[in-house]
Image (cartoon, rainbow, N blue to C red; front, side, top):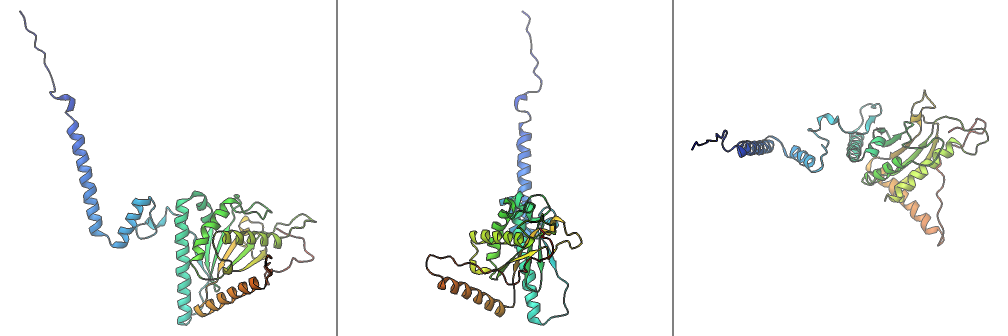
Length: 300
């Protein structure tokens, strides 16, 4: 009887490559371990905190490891032309303003990284350092993010920004001024709306959102209608960027700031005490709001 012999090639073929996968996993784990050990040995505590924050949230925070912040949206900080050398007290106040502007910019940048709709608004926000303090401006780009044309209604992206800005402002114990601005586009003849009225109504709605979001009413220094009198782009009076809101944080020398806040709180308290029960105290219109010009046509 003839015998048949079956030749088997590649013995143990069913698991011949499994060890390679296991070895690759082992090498990858060792590389990750050595990288962590290297980072611990070669970075300071601040950098380790940034790395830890990145792995927890997926967002690279501001700092030395942020690749020049290229991937983050942060408001621009503008400093007015420097004056001649000032006394030490004034220099200290200027440094306080600069630190506050940087802090606000960083916080808004982190909010922008978490919310795309907020990022669309924040990328057009500027923070200006002035003699009065800080001016935080939200600028319209005619994309429907802030206002509709000739409307005092604040659109949802702007409302969301103001709600997000509130806790940032609450950390600064300083009076807040709200300015409304419009472009110079004229209203139709016979319209009851004017630039002054439109800019005031926008600023007033911003105040309502700030207070509804937790800002104490005593922190509001005033609501001002600027109309088209302070154009963002002076040589283009119809430019959409002229339609904006400005939040002025009135940072002053410590004694002056405390006096201003104390007077403001006392004034609010007196108004509340003098009002009869069950009545609402009306806010006086701001003193520096210019009335509409009698002769020229109304604008918006």
